[in-house]
Image (cartoon, one colour):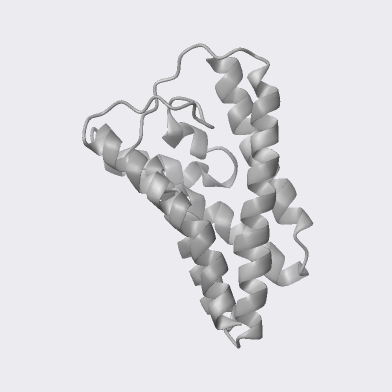
Length: 180
């Protein structure tokens, strides 16, 4: 069971983390990031939606004029019908992330005898690791990750975290498409 858990999590995380590090490295090396984002051009402001407004204000104040610490994604005009694409990506992301990081991992860790706090910490660490391409903005994924993880731990159901994750991503990508 331990080997299976390691295999599943590594298979899920390695591509995501490597892609996130690659995007961050390209950004800090001065290269423009031109992939189509799932957020509006200012990720710090967009990640501030929902429960992270206060953390955003504090982080922006601390960062001050060091805007290279945050990924800035140039966005050209995107047709409005991309909202449909964004909703599909939001659904796929919500289901896959919550199933693997909350449902699978937390269940397995419980079966292996981990206490809930240690499991929560590992889940948050893994969840934030593949959002590193946000620059320091990846820290703003922690409040949502905490909510999603605790919701699963408390209710033993994935529906709430999946719906919350879908709504969060769907709102951000809809704004990104319609504002561009």
